[in-house]
Image 1 (cartoon, one colour):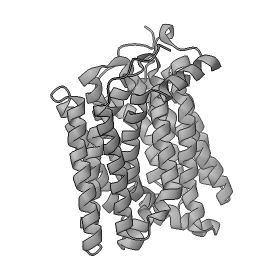
Image 2 (cartoon, helix red, strand yellow):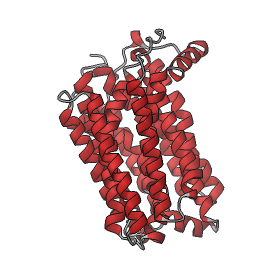
Image 3 (cartoon, helix red, strand yellow):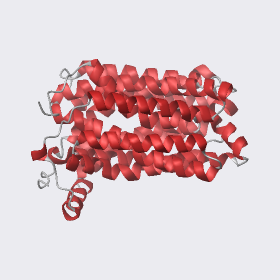
Image 4 (cartoon, one colour):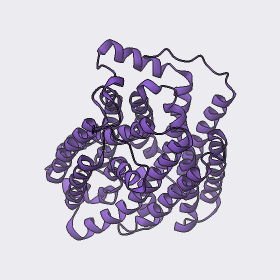
Length: 405
C-alpha cells in the first residue's frame, strides 16, 4: 500500500492537522508574558524584544512563498517533517540564546520553518475533500487549533513565574519533538507523484505571477489577512493592553486569550454546522455582522467606559467568532481558484496574511498603544477595510479562468 492511502475524516486527524498549525501560534502566544523578563535579562529596551515578534513574522511570511511550492513538487509529507526538524533546531537556539541578537536570529529561523506545517496542512485537506466536507474538516481543525492559543499564554505565565523565560522554549521544543513523532506515524502522503509540479524556476515564476495577478485571489487573500490584523493588535500589544492598561499581572494573560480562543472555537463550530446548509458567501456575510458589531461596540466602550477587563475584552472575543466563521469559507474559495497548485496558493495566502501581521506588529500596533481607544479604532479600521474588499469581490464581474499552470 502506498503512503497516499485514503485519508480519514476523524477528530484524530483534525487534531494532527491542528497540531501542525499550532506551531505558529505557539511561537507567538507562549512567550508573550515573558517580554518584560527577556528585556530585563538581556538589559535591552522593550522595543528590542518586540522585534523578536516582528522578525519571526516577516521570516514566517517570506518562507511561506516556498513551502507550498516545495510540497507541490516533492509531496506534502517530506516538507512537513523537514520543516518541523528545522523548527526544533531553532527552538533549541532560542532556549540557549546568550543575547538579544542571537534570539533575533533563532526567532527568524523559527519563522522560516513554522509556516510549512500550516500551509501544507491546508493543502492536505483540499487534496482529499471537496465542498462542504472540506469546509467541515477545515472548521474542525480551526476548533482544535483554537484551544492552543488559550492554553499557551497560561502555560507561558506559569513557566515564566516558576522556572524563568527560557523554560518556555524548552517546553516548546518538547512539543515539537512529540509532533514530529506523531506526524511521522500518522500523516500519509496525499499528493500522488503523477500530479506533482516540477520545481522549475520558469514554471514557478509563471505560477506565482498567475496567482498574484489574479483579481479574485488578491481580494480573497486580503479578507482574512485584514481580519487577522484587526485582532492581532491585541495579541501584539498584549503586555501593554493587559498589564499597563487593565492592570493584569503576568499570571493573568488567560483573561484575554481564553475569551479570544473561545470565540474562535464558537465561530469555527458554527461554520462547520452550516456547511452545506448555507452558501459560503452567506456564512461570510454573517461572520462580518459579528465582526462589525463587535468593532463598533469596542470603540464605544473604549471611548466612554472606564477601563475594565470584562467589557474591554468581550468585544474582541465576539470579533473572533465572526473571524472564525469567515476564514474557512474564504480559504476554500481561494484554494479552489488554482486546483493544480493549491500548495502554492496556500503559501501566497499565508504570505499576504503574515506580511501584514509582521508590519502590524512592528509598525502599526506600537503606534496604537497610547490608549484603549486608539487600539479599538485600529481594529475598526482593519475590519472596515476587510468588509469593503469583500463587498467589492461580491459585486465584481466574474473574471476569466487563469491558464492552467
